[in-house]
Image (cartoon, one colour):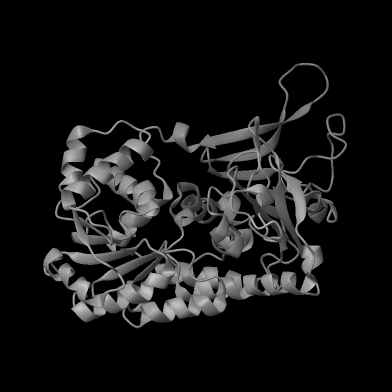
Length: 488
């Protein structure tokens, strides 16, 4: 990892007046300012097609902080932060308008970091506009968001467009889950603690569950989501990224190249899911009307703008097998869905039961130990284990207990940042470790496309589940067939 100092940047946000910029990027940049992590000479240039002034952009940024910061704005920090902000009105489809950037950035004093907070169909326009105005240098970078395509073919097309102007080591592909403290802590947990390093394989682990549950529905994005579905929207990126961190071999070091190499090996080892095994390996669901936290909510087909004939999935559960030595015979069960009972992202590592039990007075079969890694909402790690109940009578009685490492409690003096703050900072520093390589993206799409194709050929509709539940009954059966159950 690089040290805290880095060359000042001209951070240019394309789509600066859009939802992503106002809800995430400006909030994260303010928090970095508050923590004194932005170089004094770094500038933030908002670019959008709407008629606006720099003073107007400053006002929009302030309104965004009021709406989404969830903390009181510190006036001194705000004054310092607002002085970094400026705005350019550029129609991203008009190449000649990019010349305005030549007067706004200073390649001699600062590195140009281009943040593409726009739809992927505009990427080609931006790349060509930047190339034609001659503002880029070998130090320049670009940051882009998911979705990077909707299948392998479209992903390659987007990456090819970017590769025409930016070299691969200049490209930073964001998955904000990779900026979360608990995902990063997987590296420390696995490779800095012998208790886990030596017990992280098929000899001691029975199975692993990864759950990413959302309590929200479509939130006005019906048309976009219906073309995408939960498999492409969440599993192809967030869940597979978590899986690679859980399953990868120890990297040679913490460099981007070493970590990317080990993650790609995992993706290449995923057992294909095809027409032959898709029914037994996957479950698709679509939510119906129900209740979330006591309030009635509509079903997927009742959402505003819905196509009543849609068979798009809002829930996916999959059994994943990794065909390598470490994970032979250890299934990974992944599930993700909308309108779940609550927002929850966690990894549960279930260790094998002991073969012999000398505590039959307490348990006919000893419960297995579990390592539970909470990614959100309450970041931390639990170890579920058995302890003796205190007492002086003759019998030894056991009880399941938790060793609880809550990040907010354990590290009270340290700020727990969200994923975007960390990733924006690393992009400004020029550290690609936590970003996705092109090969990772394309390997993930290769595996997911096979599932999507198998579903298309199976012609079976998604199973329904009421909003406020953990998915269709069939997802329970997915584990029950193997004699296991979801962690609830």
